[in-house]
Length: 508
Image (cartoon, rainbow, N blue to C red; front, top):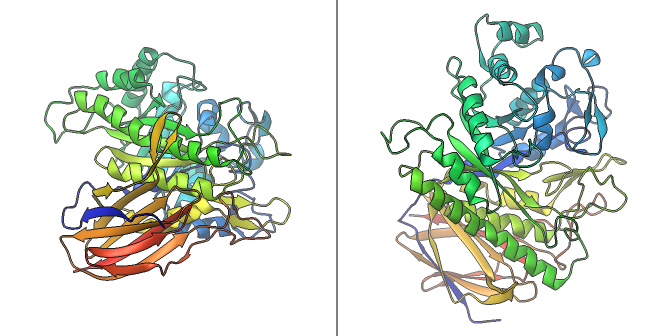
């Protein structure tokens, strides 16, 4: 055991609220995310509600899933919503050219997605088609979804079986316009974003929170171009930002290049640390993009939405390379925990985040076995579950002292990541031991309020690439963690190598 590290937390100094929406999800028409993941059809022997897989819904409801982004992703800018309404056997087909070059039959469309969100009790985040769509098409979709009277689109919705409008607060203006969404320059896209935002109207009591497709990685020019396009952000701080209310950011973690991203399992120790260092880069990116935003938005009216993040590895052998199916290991879980620590620290600006993706694609919560029908909860799923108490809690600053580091790619990687929050008379402390080999001892120096009880949970496994399968559903699963002791400053606890630990505190 090494010299204890100290985490100093002032329990009586709450900061910005950690929006529950940073624990959001993403479902694209990609591989087996929608078809075979969420959607099995009403005639499937797999238990379902109106074609939506029941065990997937139950698993996500247990996470208190706050929102779900759909239909993409790259697919969104090829998707024409009218193709996905009306009788399923009469819906036109299309080619999903981005993901596997497969034929899409549009069986899962607007009504099915909104039904899914209602079953999940999740807020819908709909991405409009700017890449290949039209202004009127996007405007009509908003009307179809949210208008209550006898307007043309409301009448069409009723003809398709839905009388009352839905509530759709989150509205995406395009996706990755710098790439698959049109290969546009920032200056080109800004004009389109302002135009589409203008025609994405509020109907009745449904106020849209419009999210303009933002930068990839460290493209600060893209963020600055978007921020310069807003109406006067320095004016009355009570007035909302216009013509849109947020900008997005995409960032993926991998250990190699886009051509050879690294393997999901069987990775080396060096690849473990490279993944952790690149996951920690999210904090740097949030700082840099937020600094640009602060220059134009002193009142912080504009939200930053990280609506695609997660690990992206080489696809599993024997699977369709366009379906982006990868295994999910303990390493992925710690990549997720590191990201959440960053989101918590930037809670004053980061209003939402969406992991890519929810089922069977990239860093999934759930894997469904196509042969047995089994449902597998991944290690990443368990991080989301262990963090539910952070939802809508107030962030607490965690001051770390005595943290060991490791040099990775010429920079120093701290081997402990942490964040904390408080809500009423309870607090949650999250701790990630990024050291793949060495156990750690951490002293929680808890100040400002009396701790009258605690409970800890740990997520770890013997091997850093351990993962769950239909044959071993709980190879990586959270367990009670008893290695927590009273300490004159608060609590002392042991962190196993490559582990994630949460400590729930009862306060007075």
